[in-house]
Length: 475
Ligand code: GDP
Image (cartoon, rainbow, N blue to C red; front, side, top):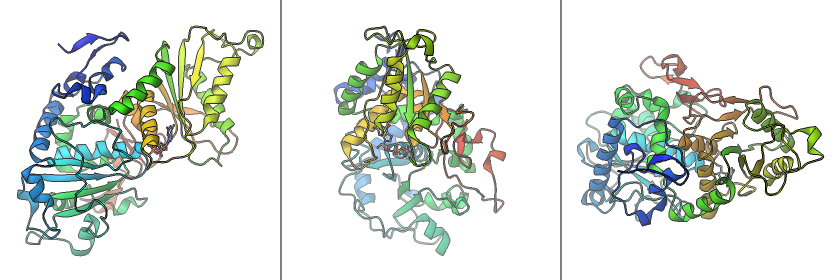
């Protein structure tokens, strides 16, 4: 029996309701079987069908993964290939990194879902900047793309699916390439994105090795593909749990990351009754000052009763005692130290109206994004993970860093409105309707009707995102 009562009082299941298998060596990835001690059990149960798909996928990965005969055969092939790759037992989806860690984790989940739907093996091209972040997710195999992959360094000369669709068209007799770039990089021109059209999928399924370039959470576009729709609904009867389940299945902090997460957890969160995460991502520092953003955050947390107001009268006479019992811990994640400092001082130097003691801390302030730096990414991953352990989250708009945190945590965050100038927006924040990430640049082209369309009008489980007007979110 895998259920037990943790030191934190959660009657959790260490295998996350069957998402995980117990066959891994525990020492190689301590977090895999310990995460349940830190996180409340998810109220969302994976469907039996999802679990069976995962077990089937793991089997495929074992038989086709790196260093198998099939892998060597297909990866050794020249670019120009046979008539059709459709007959191959093993087909691959090679994930490549682009943009920051949040973007990368979103595309990893979307890629994994696409791999499951198309019976492809997901291999990840992790450089040194990502090699220390995660454990292997698939038992008795590896998801790491071997470094001797022939296009490790340079993929510029590989044909893309767009160029194939645009320039030549294709027909049954044509020779298909063995390797093709699937470019789903964010494009502001949603009219030219045909990935979700049946004719694209018919082409793609003939290609043994797809190399994915993307920084987008494109999972919602898989629902637009008629041949996947039914299967997706069967795998995910609750459509807003895709990232939640697949993210918790894939992303286990490496022992190195877990050590840091544990340390930070003990210092900043362990002692509090309630944990509030504030994720503050400022994309353009010129639009609003730090102070305006702080005022906005305070307006949001006070209005939604996440944190109490300061008692202006009592505060001058009785500031917070050093050893008072902490009722709420606030974890601030931001590149800039000002946020943690100002909020910490505010709650340290004053009394709150209801007497609650609030402790604010900020584990790091990296000042700028350094996504090619391994240690920087470990800190980012640790903070994403810690935010996901909070009871409530306030997150910045349009930030994929925040999306990963609330998706893993199964939380619907309060999303801050984008401030302009020195005015605090009204309302300062809005509760997200879903814990799914937002797909920022979804397609707008309806393939069968050859016209542009707003897909929320066709699918009742898709909405525009609170923080990105043209984006799509499953709910
Ligand atoms: P997005 O740009 O907000 O959508 O998120 P990404 O994760 O894709 O890119 C931002 C990157 O900047 C992160 O991956 C980190 O490298 C860094 N970063 C941004 N905010 C934080 C933060 O609060 N803490 C840490 N440690 N790094 C951050």
